[in-house]
Length: 180
Image (tube, rainbow, N blue to C red; front, side, top):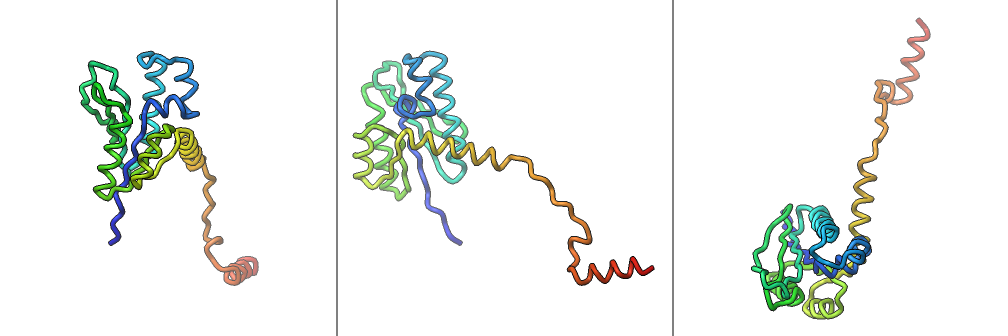
């Protein structure tokens, strides 16, 4: 039996919301992270990650809580995706770098989604794959397009006995029928 390798997706939450074409319109119009519209974009990102990763990949979305004195670093899980806010005094970048490093040390195939050049260089130098926020936006859009195509109604093929009999036998049966 072939064992599949463990996979981990780490998403730089606020970076993707500000840089990803799928989320940028909302975050550009609502720069306040506490705004309801921005919360909708955040929920959309979380749902997208849940759907994109499926069952074969674990996922962590890291949001920057470093400037938030009330950040208690408690994580929560939504649809199998772990949501983490960086603790007070620490950036999401440092949390992402540590998560990526630890995963590679454990032999986990890791992909970091961020358009932050520093994060991309740091994790790539450590042997971790990376994807830009726009690349992720495109991948998610393609995922949903494929899912829609799979759900389109298909016309059922009409199954008859005549369709299951070879042509020579069908001709003989027709001759018998017409000869009566």
